[in-house]
Length: 342
Picture 1 (cartoon, rainbow, N blue to C red):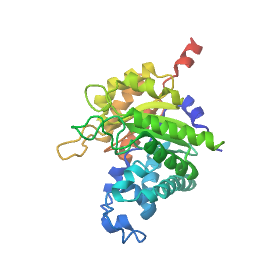
Picture 2: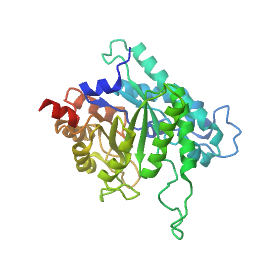
Picture 3: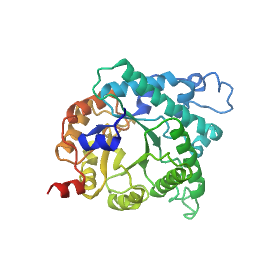
Picture 4: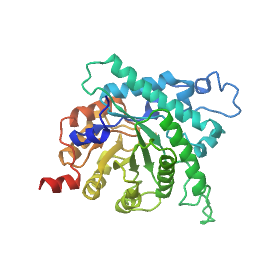
């Protein structure tokens, strides 16, 4: 029987997986690979629509998930970062969004089942599937038109409806938790929270834990929409999340001070999955697995984190090094637990 993720977090630091896009790039897929047989006559180009691969190349997606499980990941994210209707409009695939999310959740669930059936001696016994809910390619807080600051490319109800459909498909596909991640606009995240809570209310018995992960975009220590880390935290705590954390945009070295700050203010568990350093001039990531793991090991020693892993540029090698370095370290205690022990 699967251990409740909240119970697991009381006992140890959990490992979340690394980059999906980085691993997909290794397969050097062409337009025909993305299309598969079903979409071979689609009117627009589909190469680059990584979320679609859960339908057209499910074995590749399952294989990537299993590599991360073998590396030590306790949580694997569904291949659904851009899988809601608003972002799928880039490929004219709004009407396929539900099916993509459903297929992606099923791929991740299949990977967990197959991996532990093939590795019965793995002491973990299971892993958790997190339904990945990305930030969307349109923002509610900022205008895409520099000459018209009041203009918006999308509206709250439209965003919430797109997220509602995504949540429905992810839960139907069997995810254990819902992960709102890479948040650069907190209003988008609030629309996702609203959609999740609405779905729970309208579908009793479907409740899942919610994980939230924001993105500090530069040295200013703010999100793209201008919030400080503390302001971001306060803005989303009404969701009563399992965890709040940071991912993407920065490497671990640049993220350090923000993780320290978050560990001091968060009443819930904290997560951190940085990029493999900052991108080079070619947009690639050079930080080696042992380097990323060293930074995250320091955070664990300091007692700042409960969930750690990798984002852009990280691979199963990065996750294995991280898992090996922090697996036996004591997890950060929740503030109320510290009070109870004192």
